[in-house]
Length: 430
Image (cartoon, rainbow, N blue to C red; front, side, top):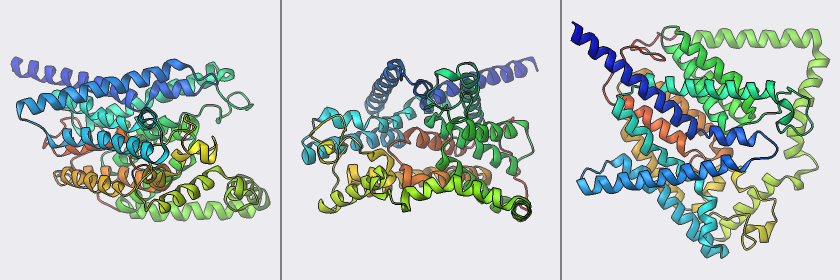
């Protein structure tokens, strides 16, 4: 009996260590320090140098892992995939920019460095396997990461609001602190919390994850696209798992809206117009010709068509021989989503997408429990909704690492003895 208790305590201690390490790695992957640095007007150099050093370390670890596996004859398919994906993307992006715009290769490599976040796989997966982390453990680590993000961000808003970049906004205005990289962490946490609440017993951690996620989206990230996509994803979840709740919630929302319009109709209508009109005018107003994103999208489409969609590479605004020469400095290739990604690699994008789909499907087929499938599908749905404007690969490598971690953990055949966010008995719909 004593030996059994000691073994149980050792396993729990090891798992707690694994959760702590994974939380720290998530903090790094979701660019915690870079986000905090970007919240200040001065944009200190230290966070950016830390990010570059982290990427260099990831390259070293990934290269060492691949060569070690090759030497031992035990090369894992997922390791090879997460190594070759960013390597081939970087090669194509840099070479095509060199051939099409006569840019030095170093500019293409520096412009494409975010794709290297795929290499987080080589530090996160060994930790998962070493400590035997389950899906619940990984989701708990994500929730802890979101909590640290939120506490730090709210603390900055309260303690040093005057030092945050606010563009002449009042102190403590919710728009003063925008940390876009944290938006993904908050959005996933919100979806995970709602999914856990719908599928399992009402555990406090589900409520914490959902609350932290929605507060972080509204108060810290303040990204309308992320918030809208997360809301749509949650609605789909409710329709899938709790159709009766969906009907009741929809009816209550419609009645509340009609009641508000009947009581304060003119005021509410005016507020809605004030909120929407600037965005509507951005696309349909007289300033359409001055819209940088739309002009960028048109330029990208024209250049791709002229080059038969072969791809033009990772052009850099820092080099005058690239698109800055044709379009000026106001060129937001990163803000046009999937088209910006296709601009880089052209027709090869379809190859990347097919290889990714094949690897994801292989991991997906090993998932046995329905609640794990629903959870992972929900996160994928969220990013599919964002793909037209945010892209799917270039800036989201660490998110795909997180998704594959969930799928491999769910397909490992192990069940958590203390499930935090999921339960082996999903609730009956309705």
